[in-house]
Image (cartoon, rainbow, N blue to C red):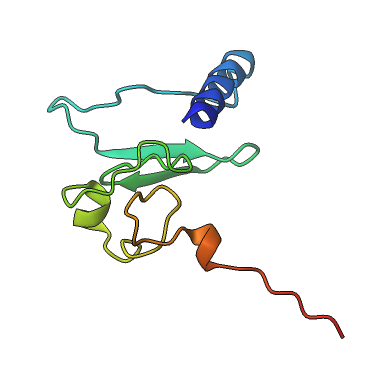
Length: 106
């Protein structure tokens, strides 16, 4: 969590220095208090990209929720059974234990 917080602070500092490149909007809601989508631009390109629907901020495990009521479990079940280092159950392997690198020399 410390790393994710430091990354968010760095982004805020960059946004202050580069007003024409980075814009951070906090608590973006419509009149009904619903988040309805996201807009972004790619530096150097004239297009504005838009996506409608729920917004998920993925910051490397920050605010991860492995409960049965989590948004991930309810709306995107494909990655649910993937192994994770943050799962605490003693019978679950971490990804670092599961994916062992193998080197073959000839």
